[in-house]
Image 1 (tube, rainbow, N blue to C red):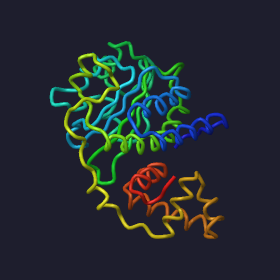
Image 2: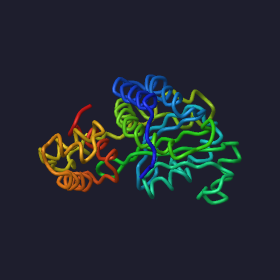
Image 3: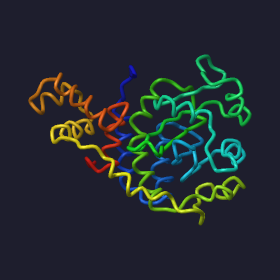
Image 4: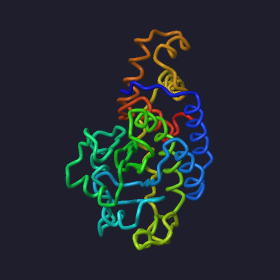
Length: 273
């Protein structure tokens, strides 16, 4: 998908982010230790992450670090539904998105672009993950990236977001929903108010598909970043057989990439970091 490779320093930085995701237990620790570390790689000035119902775009939980409250007011309607144009675009394809306004290749409409440009937002990266039963999605958006948005940024998102997804979903379940009215009114953007409880997701895992022991082995090696060829050598099976296992895993988990499958398997407790 991406003709890009990671240098050793960036690979190490992503490992540190993954480790921070494992340790994060509160919104504050997620904001400081996880989002803070993504800034060392992406050099973004603004970050927003949230959990939404897929069918309605209803916000279950949201955390904002840097986006103007007036911008949030323009993409969150009175019913507390998320109406970001880039979110809708991402949800349709579920692959990392990168937009640089004023540069050729921007596939948003003129009206959609104007929304960002009116707040002097020059570029945006976005990606997310969909839960196993396709009821909820976790979405992350990073804006005002230093320099230009390039293919390596999208490649980085494909590595980072599965880890951020698992950490933020865990924190969202443990905390109450953000007070959106307070956030849009300009109060602390990372505080958590006494609004409705976050959706209880304990029944979702009943939908976890049955994964064979061999497929679990393959999943564990995918988690470690091994290629089909590497896994074949480790398990003493052909690369073609590994490819078949991967395809079955993607189908069973309803995942659109190897990283997506790993993230869903982690969330379902099928494998562990």
